[in-house]
Length: 214
Image (cartoon, rainbow, N blue to C red; front, side, top):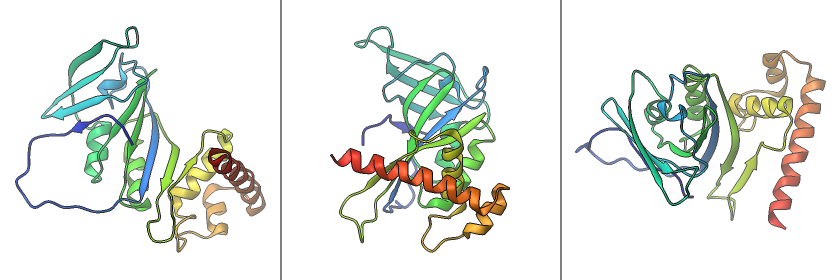
């Protein structure tokens, strides 16, 4: 998958750690007008992947110009405190910025597992107004012959929030880390309401998967 390149500091001469990542998640991160959690989200309009590097306390950004596709915009901004890229990197992940516009970012990354994803999103919500899952790719190398893209873009807001909560709480983990009834209780809804929401959302996701194969 293509994406923006990120660097968050200098070189480290220590031992190299490598692991296989089965998850690829795309997050929509939204900010208010000042966007203190990300200097890139202020005045940046890029529908293509963004190259960015955080070195010490400076964020360097290069992206295609929205007015002229052949031109490249470059700028550097002081970073004060935590930001999206630093938070994602602190969870052992590389943030790849797919787009930046309208006070928001599309961030693609590869968390080690769903627990890491849950912790990352929780921390990102401390610097952003909203963080939601746009899509999730699960590549089960042992039992699957292909990875599956699970897009949440076709769901209603309630369906998306329900599926996202189920993913983050571990309802779709194997083995499950939360039961169906406990998930309903945590969400403050009846088991019947949760069943209807998940059934509707899962039907749409399955239709989307089969449509992508046609």
